[in-house]
Image 1: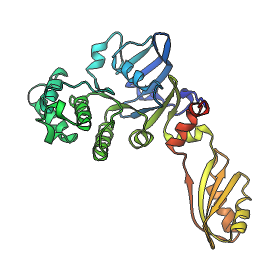
Image 2: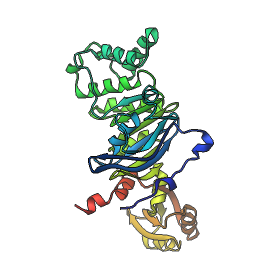
Image 3: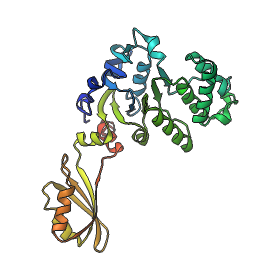
Image 4: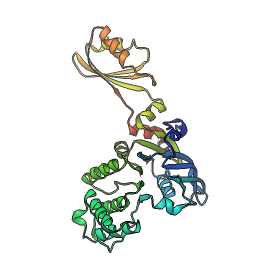
Length: 333
């Protein structure tokens, strides 16, 4: 498996910005003798949407529970807004909105009464409480279900009710475990919109095993495997750090062999594939990592007298990154 030290990938100058909203140092959690989380370090700023990505059992949910103070770490520290979760648990909890993987709901309440109850628990009252309940009912497409008993809701609407209670008190930090679990495509779009909008001025931490989910929502991803963070950065920078080949797609007017010969004159080219018929052909070119070959490729084909119709660099996808970082799973099977 490829292991990349998180501190060397996509590091932020947090000291220049001030104290990070969330700071975890040497975070470790054992269940009995089993290490679910081992020496995990990360920092998350206000205004960041950060996703924990990994296969089942990687330690994502354990990490989120530790951030909320749901249970204490076996060792290590977590600070949220400067407060240690061990010594100031109440200060931490009042700043958090939490959606666990299995949402605890009072099933004999209606959706509206449950949200009023949760808003009151979080310190809202009077007109502000009523206004926020109505806002989250609308935001999460629950207004038509507001007077429905929770036990009569579909799984999707129960999940949306869980989302609404996490948002209702406008917490500084949202912690969302698999936020789009069990909801339909239309509801997924709405949830993504709300998370992205909220993350502009607040901190959002989420976990998912759904690759496109993380790519669409998150500013930064932390890839977990076997209880450790194996990489952390934006997807495009992770691709560069992994050292995979650069890939370019070219559309060129000319005969295949002659165009191929021109492309091969670029020293960093490793492999060329060609598709198409006639004189307009598409070439997929793999080059050595760490260098942008677009200018060299363009010069090579035009100097040889061919017409370049298009040239794009193809980024490594989040799925490619994920599979490379957790490759041992498939290697052992």
